[in-house]
Length: 277
Ligand code: NAP
Image (tube, rainbow, N blue to C red; front, side, top):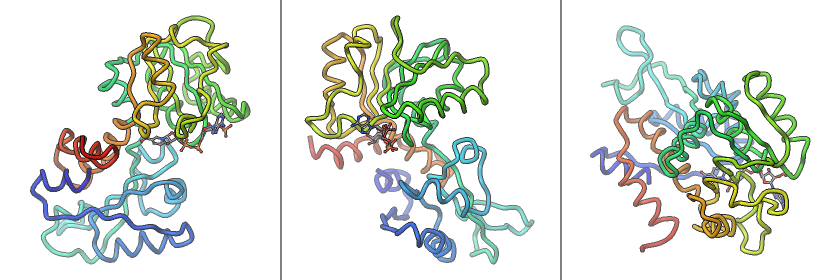
């Protein structure tokens, strides 16, 4: 999707994938910086490690405690830090600037793919791993009416709830299933990646017909058993492809300074993930 985006913007840049051992992450970032790369994306398990390795953290990376996008910058003639794309000559001094585009992508996907305005809503969030943690904190900043957290390992949901209570003391956070309807059920567990996985939502405790919409962060398979059950129960549904797309689109905007050609990128991503339709 990034190469499709770069081509649509008429840039002769290339987006390449490198497999890096976590032990070599610092050297890899410094190497890319030394070679005047425009930027980097990082994925699991590098996102948390990179927080300690970049020269400057954007507010987004500080807020979520993770870096998934790096922008390399150099000083211009007046000594001001600029993205490398803005500089006519190779600068003598460069720095790495860490951002996080994951959290915004979650709420953008809920708004654009489910038509959900989050303010005043009640949400059941399943999962408190890396993605669940970020989703919980991001949702908590969106003026919800109430947030319900369910996770196999209860202590992790409790830790997330504690963090939310510190950051957003006004928000009602409940551990466990809701006893009345919610606007959204959001699956951030890995249940559904395998075809014989049980549903991440215990239907004995919460029936999906009491949810207005269901979002599954999983995008392969395109329709998990959860999304099938949700559709059958009359809920609006969307899978996690939008989340992947929007974090990438935002990263492309940071590197290029231009609006990302999102629909071109979506088509390229769908082709890559699901094959030619
Ligand atoms: P993670 O840190 O490994 O967390 C996994 C989560 O799933 C935890 O809450 C874990 O519960 C739960 N879980 C795993 N196996 C389970 C089981 N057998 N029964 C009940 N719960 C179980 O992974 P992650 O990075 O947060 O990713 C979670 C999901 O989000 C994955 O499916 C991933 O593909 C998806 N994701 C999608 C995007 C996107 O762009 N669409 C981005 C990131 C992640 P415990 O805490 O009890 O272990």
